[in-house]
Image (cartoon, rainbow, N blue to C red; front, side):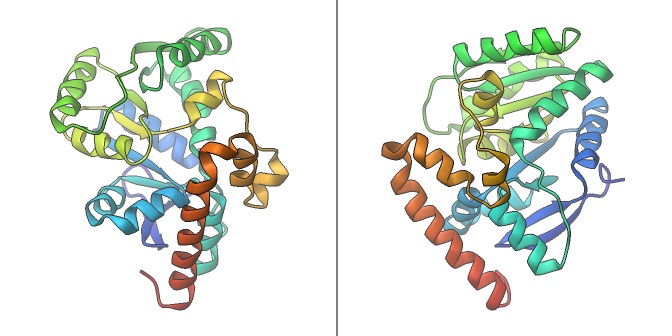
Amino acid sequence: MIAEAPVKRRAVGVDLTVGTFQEHIAAFAELAQKRRSTYVCCVNAHMCVEAHRAADFAAIVNGAAFATADGMPLLRALNARHRLKQERVAGNDIMPALLAEAERQGLSVFLLGSTPEVLERIRARAGRELPRLRWAGMEAPPFKPFDAADAAATARRIEATGAHIVMVSLGCPKQERWMAAAHGHLNAVMLGLGGAFLLYAGVDTRAPKWMRDLSLEWLYRLALEPGRLWKRYLITNSWFLWLTLRDRWGGGL
């Protein structure tokens, strides 16, 4: 079973979990039922670059029980290197699927991150679509750099709620650092979902499927927020391209 022995393959310096999308959802739910302390990283180009820049962050990502191929460019690199037909397991898809599975199995969910307004919009949508979903709680902490003491205190508060699943949206790399700090102290499945909160809440829109299939999701987002994202994408995408080429032709990272 993927829950007990997830299989990983390395691409662009990151150990990625392989398996179908539904196998991942089933594994998360199974571990949540057991309240097994587990964290999940949804890996894209930005996270790969952050892992390359900081060895301690790379250890966090590669130490996750599950590191899914969230971004299409990374997925293509994984499949090309290992001759796989791995499907995308993206945070934007995990969130609605796992919420639905949580309702079906009676698992309680805690949301950590974003803003109070976004959290309320998530609650409202889930209330319409998943009326029997159990909420363990929601918290939108103030925006500030990662702090280990704060992370420990937050983990204790969430543990006291008895949550089975903790969905985290604190931004990369903060959310991954938070989950790693909480691992072993918070008996729940923790998933770093980032922008999936905004999408589920209806604040953000998703690129059309044809753009996602062509690895152009970044271009769609850039068109929506050019002032904020142009520099990040110029640097990140260029760096990721170099890492991918080195991984493909230089014998791996």
